[in-house]
Image (cartoon, rainbow, N blue to C red):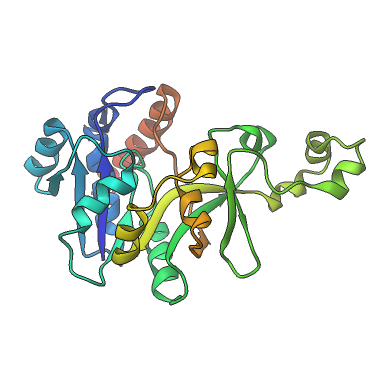
Length: 265
């Protein structure tokens, strides 16, 4: 199994975030090390279009690959690297800005695909814990069927708590505030994907679909083309670094871990 980490230098909200220092090393190296700790991963490759990221990764003893600057998405970038992998490879897309992702979460997603011949790909989700988190359009929600496959992904709150809403004059927000246990019905999609190499190459050749463009979610392209996406719970919550606030939180987590290791040593 090969974990490929797409990593661009440019970022609208946090420019150069992949190289921002956290607990003594650039952010991207934390993500690489987390991926290497997963029991199911044999190799980790950073796929980038930026020499600064490439040099940072390779000079630290890890593997990186230079890819085209024209790619529209992380999936397209990792597909370029996957072209050179053996037929039948399992490819894990680990987001570069996830420096606190749990290795156990990666393993869960890989095992979900390995144990399900009917799935084209697998991904992970986390429990939504507050109304604010549910209403935030930056948090992608996933609805999962009884068989464990994704039915739909959306930036909107899903599914609709109809009966509960009727108890509060049709207002779902009031229903959730009054009955917080309703939050157990909502899942946040996290951006970890596991593909069979051949499906990844096929997927990235598909034209963008109407719903994908409307919601700006490329996983909808897979669903609209009939893919079966297995969804498993993450082993623990992770934080994607998109803002200064995210960076502050992640720095606190990793600096605390580093201090704990020093005490043990």
